[in-house]
Image (cartoon, rainbow, N blue to C red; front, side, top):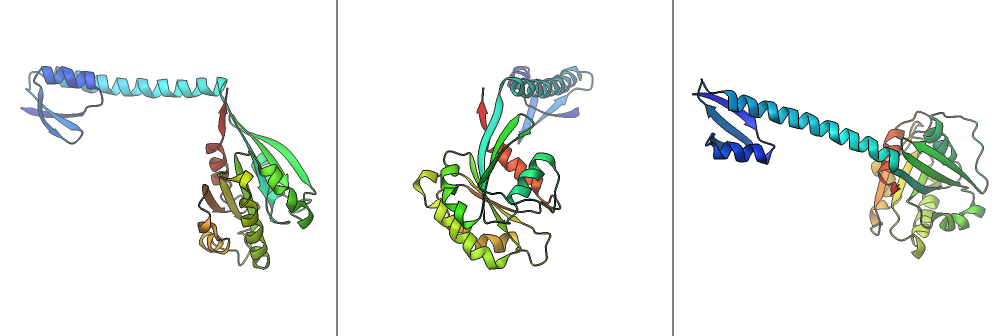
Amino acid sequence: MIPCIATIIDLDALHFFHNANAINSVEGSVWEFEVKQGNRDPCVCLCNFLYQRREAMGLWESFLNWLRSLFFKQEMELSLIGLQNAGKTSLVNVIATGGYSEDMIPTVGFNMRKVTKGNVTIKLWDLGGQPRFRSMWERYCRAVSAIVYVVDAADPDNLSISKSELHDLLSKPSLNGIPLLVLGNKIDKPGALSKEALTDQMDLKSITDREVCCFIISCKNSTNIDSVIDWLVKHSKSKS
């Protein structure tokens, strides 16, 4: 007797072999077949069938994903907020173009920009962080897919103000349940906070009424920008 081992992933094939009394034993998800030396064809056929079936399913799934991309677009609208000079406008430019400039002009009031990543269109509201503009944050955060709060992780003097502004904003009933992404920017600078320290300083663990995610990033060096984009894309909504 020559043992032949195959992993069963098709119930029809399993039913066939069960009826043919070819199954000798079962261990987990692996079915062990013992086929007489002169009668290997059933096992060989099974292995070939399963392999071809798996390859065909992979091609079919790829085709379906391509088809979905033609007829179903993803979109999201989000607001970028945070104190002045936190790097919000730099983040928008890095996401949109991959480029960074040291001579970025701070946003006065607000700017809106659309960015396309694959089949996902992201509408970004870049809101000014100066004290006179903070009262309008709540208005532009209503009904967005996510709130992105940018913090200068290398500016400890303004952390308490940033924390206070964030928690005050999230207390607004109109913003209940909207996912929150907190980004500690400028980690390329000396003394920048770690993710754990930023989470603690901003008291993020006390926020329990919504999904909260935190990354430490550098717009200058593009550190973790891919992770930010991945998070945003996963929170986009389908639109036919």
